[in-house]
Amino acid sequence: MYLYHMYYRGDGSLRDDTLYTLNQLKEKHPDLHALHVQKYETRPEVPKQHFPHIDCDWGGAVFLCPVHPEKICAALAQYRKREVPPFPYHEIPVADLDPSNLALWLFKTREYTPIEVIPFEQRLLEEMREVPEATKGYFDEQRQKHEPALFFVHVPHVLHKGSIDMSRYNVQYTREYKTGK
Image 1 (cartoon, rainbow, N blue to C red):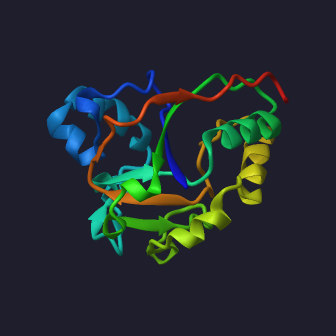
Image 2: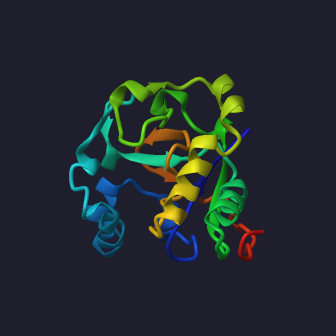
């Protein structure tokens, strides 16, 4: 069973072969921190939100996804009716991660609520392998409003407290999707 970390920017290459949290990037690589913190310019409260069960804030966690990036890109192309370029991602075996550093964020509501973060249970990942209908609806809604769509709205996340050594994993790429296909 695998978890995925997808990259919006760049080629998926990492400095130091480490996937750092937002908080760690601030000290280790300020230029990368500045790039990634831009996502929160209109929502400055987000990086300070707290995750129960792993006792860290948003900036202290690495976000992983149980849904394969290929499925998310295909849904984005189908429901947004636009081309989706290839995106780099890493595939990480769940067995390589310490479960005491993991929590599940169900992400059923649009805004973060701590009640949606539950203790990590690997058996629950099987139920989280597909793009949720709510995500597809969100993609379609954003298309109709002519507004950009975030990749992971309503997609469950696995939260990992702290950095992850990525030296054993190769970067992979999703395929390119043509308009509406």
